[in-house]
Length: 112
Image (cartoon, rainbow, N blue to C red; front, side):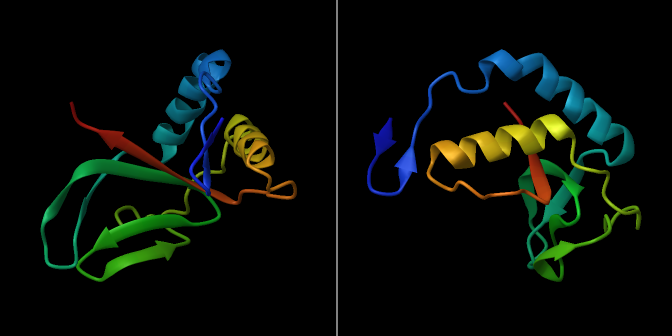
């Protein structure tokens, strides 16, 4: 379903993959657990993050940036699980980006 000029909504798109996604995230977390992140001015952000793939997004006293290594552990980010790559490509295809190939994935954990 198209929403506005630049967005689409595919209700239930990920539901059939829920368990596969959960397992993939657990695999990522074994190598790169959730990190607290801070703004450049030192304020703690309300989410925890981790990454997988070639690069990871991070935020700390240096500001926002991409890094080939986890700045907390100085280890490379774990590989991006195949299911996350496949779903990203499928979603991109539905949105009209036929040749999209993801190389990294930012995972956010929000508190309730």
